Image (cartoon, rainbow, N blue to C red; front, side):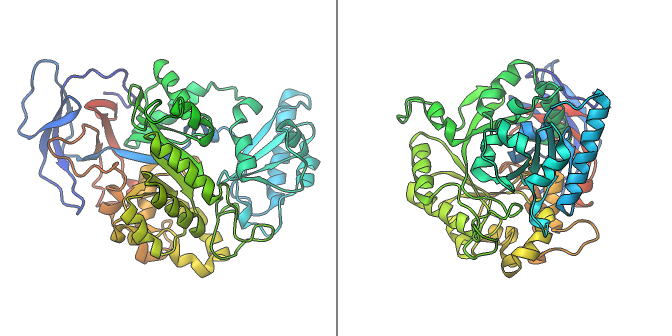
Length: 507
């Protein structure tokens, strides 16, 4: 098979010849044959074809693991991120302004006139600057163009005066953040439509995900993932399995009349390989925008403890409604105060689901989180970006950031992800960050919280253990022993979903 995504599944048996099954402790089997039938592993060992329709993949002694999941993605934003002006790496506001100015000069020069198209940029990190972003300074270089710059953590935007008007926002001197910003973020397609069709952008992103061994994604896109995915699949998109999340503004829609049992429930099918996912709510901000809600002060006025996007009462009310309607929840909580408040709400309501990020935690909450059965949906690659700002503004609590090994030892179920586009949609980067807690050549940050390769790998398989008879037929063939090379260097040879090879580089 050529290295491309396949089309519709055939449903025929798949026999994978001569594959080494990887275990969590790093041991591997001798090469064995694996037969997948009816979407599950039916036989392991000496396997013969069942009928003429059986297909075969020759693993050639390669390593085989369960398929990988990314439990936190904003798919549309990730697909479009690379087509926007990159202002990442700018160490001061003036560097961003210079880059915007240069880009606008190029845009106007190519069109032969100064037009008014919207300029979208991405990637700046204001928490790392010693001076604030200024609307006036951005106005000085933007001419007639509305300019919208999305921060690297996507929790704030730097807009010039024209874009503030376009978005219906009051004038201000600095950034737009949190709930006010999210309302703008959800409207970006309307405000600044792209020339490349969304379908094509998303298909490229999903094909790339398959090449990295991703068999499933929880899509927490702001603009109605539960609505757009059935349309994409009907139009022929080839994608991993999708759990399509939604936000509080769609809760009434999902619940139908609002009475238990009258609407959709988490896990209900929406399309082929698309299920309804959780209710997502963003209860606090982020470290990158200095808005994570913390027990101790760390940020400048007027929000020295960060910001709450929902009060405790609102969180409990939303979790109660979701739970009564058969819905799981995904509660964004980055600061330790936000995590505590989220766990309080889980305890009172009996809700099922996850805390997204759990970046800074009180150690007492680890045991409580495990006891409540709340999943920690964490994105280890964030520690690579947040290390410097943590040491600057959270130095007094840095030892409580990304408590991955402590979570594991406390019995908290871990589900790794990327939060793409905030970090690349690459499970091997997430696994690498969880294991090494540093870029290559750097010392590990809080090394006691490193996960083992096995722990990180099997926290990325949606709870699936090493392959055995009865396992779901979502498997990945690897060119490299994942215990023998650094995780970010692992190469994927083939991705199989439900017994169907959806991507392969094998001959």
